[in-house]
Length: 150
Image (cartoon, rainbow, N blue to C red; front, side, top):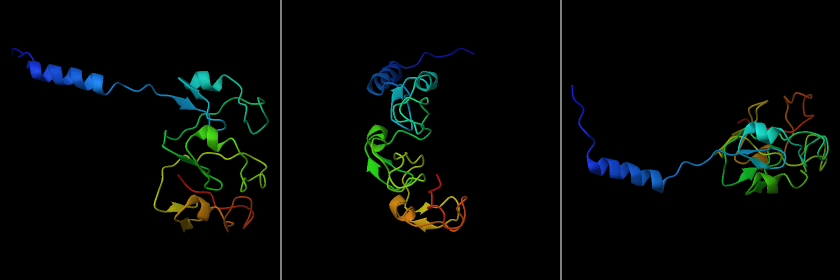
């Protein structure tokens, strides 16, 4: 069996596609402050200015969701265009108490309905879902707010 050379137009099309759609380098973000790094090892090797234990008292932690055009707080539904801008302010519905912790990004994608990961209650927005207490919260009945499942 002999192999035929690829027609010139196929080679030209392939080269054009490579230049028109260059491969994007993957970047990794800290879920607490939005710091961007080229590898997980680089990200998690340095201290985080917005770590829950206090400024620079803990390392960056990998945000495991996808890059998105905007991010929502998992506790209250606050919307921001970057993780950094989302996590820069305190959250009114933070589990540690009102304004006793920063916003944290929701890992899942936008949905028509968000479902509580503890009891199954549904709402059309994260904000609506997290506004009420959950009957099956792990801290006890009605001792915590609904949290959206991924």
